[in-house]
Amino acid sequence: MAKQYLMAIDAGTGSVRAVLFTVAGAQVGCVQHEWTHSEDPRFPGSMDFDWVKNWALASECVRGVLAQTGVAPQDIAAISTTCMREGIVLYDAAGQEIWACANVDARSVDEVGQLIRMDPEMEKEIYAVSGQTYALGALPRILWVKNKLPDLYKRVAKIGMFNDWLCYKLTGVLAVEPSNGSTTGIFDLQKRAWDSQIMRKVGLKDDILPPVAECGSIVGTVNTKGAADTGLAVGTAVVAGGGDSQLGCVGVGVVDEGQAAVFGGSFWQYEFNTTSGATDAQCRVRVNCHAVPNLWQNEAIAFMPGLAMRWFRDAFCQEEIRLSREQGTDPYALMNAEAAKIPAGSYGMMCTFSDVMDYIAWKHAAPTFTNFDFDPAKFNKYTFYRAIMENAALVTKGHLELVREATGKAPSEIIFAGGASKGAVWCQIVADVLGIPVKVPVVKEATALGAAILAGYGVGLYADISETARKLVQWENTYVPDMENHRVYQEIYAPWREVYQAQLALSDRGLTRHMWIAPGL
Image (cartoon, rainbow, N blue to C red; front, side):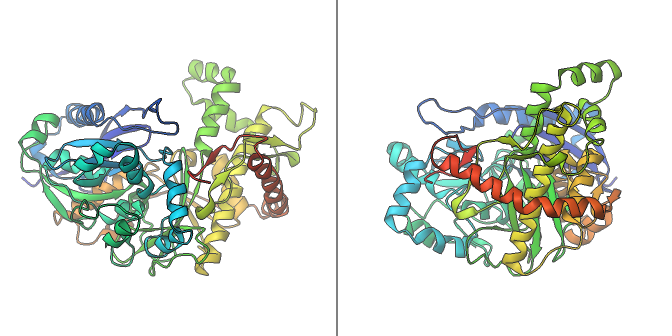
């Protein structure tokens, strides 16, 4: 009997999960465990990754989903992995993990300053090749290890990303794939391969770069240790996956030139597909390899819209939380019903959370609500709640225009996925702000499905990644913009940008705290 299932292991910022799919793309089981990444008190801004504890959690997810579904390990055709991007793991010559940090680790302020003093133009030169700046890249972090932990640095023999680490734990084979590997800033975008010259340029050893395995290629098979840890069958194929946003695009069918997606989670990513991989002359936009060969993505990231919503719910909406428990519903559903009654533009109130991305000088003003008065009929908590939604959509408009400036192209529609797409109000606001249709897929948490598609492609169950993605995606709804609301948002956008710059200036002067600022700025 043919093997009927595909597994994805997804290591996100806040949790890890194992998801089982049929070869037809239907999800049959998911087990998830939350995890946290702690700051080392010695190193402000650090975000350590506990590889021992976190591998145990990942293994529990795999065992759990097998138990939940009753699927026999021998019936799994292949496994692939995906993860938060930018997190890195360093290994010694014996293949043992010796240091790891998660995605927005910001301990390397001194090292960014060191790199800038070394050559003020070097960051732009590296960006032109790699599509990355120092903001989230691996170079300052590895240099930090060299400077602050010199004895450990001497032992470093290999570097990898978290999705590659999951494959390594299963197979004993370490290889880095291009979609997440390109976020290190050590990749040549056009070649989809390491550029060891970048390492030499910044004074780092260049012999720690493992082989590259293209997305969708077989890395190895589950070995005895991997099987003992997870309950998987020895010999099961393990396929190179990709970064969460790239595989999310595969999962929602954003696999062709000119298509675009917005993934609305803790952070919001705007992804626009190109066939050139060209970088921006002003270094404002991130450029990554797509998980689909011969495609690249211009990316712009909004910081913390999902986290801002969670904060607002937990800080101000205890009554909705209580009612939702009584009614067996989601507190956001109750909040959304009230926010829908607030007119577009929130009576002129604005908030500043995330700014439009400027990758070479990436910073955000202190979170601020402004331009409200003391009329409780208009300016109640639901007005503030709606303003947070509108802020995220206005940032997305800025990102669409930014990428249009960089590439000369813009999409005719947006695919919207992730947790933010579960509520109709936010979806409609995004459509109204952008002035183009917003399509929401049935599978909103699409990253794991993207990993499953690559797993199936790797073992020959699917002939083509893009064709399979287009075939499997199903649409739940399309939100058509209300053009009267769009006119309101068009009028708001320019003043909002000016207000944001004024708030950013206050943070730059030290009068308020930046919500986030890249190391070294």
